[in-house]
Length: 97
Image (cartoon, rainbow, N blue to C red; front, side, top):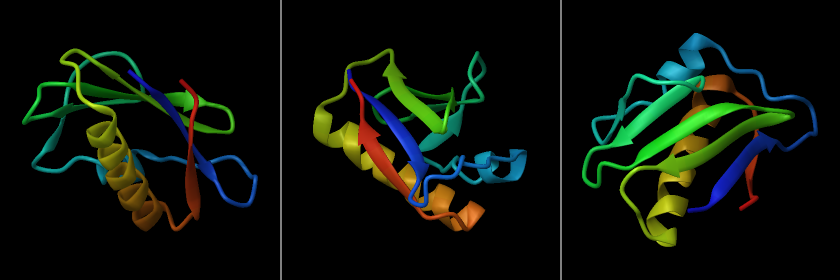
């Protein structure tokens, strides 16, 4: 499965807080216990999106149940949208794996 880096448009380090990370959970993406700064379980498939610090932003990858590339990108798109809204930072995504 792919890995993604979410980082700021302006080149500065992405700032995350507990509040901005809390904004990433939804009814379809629920918090899951485990390592990383946040783990979200995609309820329909059982796949886990692991979110962890990776300079200059956050790295996201998937564990568990395999999901197709289109769904991975849709999940990442939703995470970026919610993170931008919660943090007020302009972000973009780079596929790194």
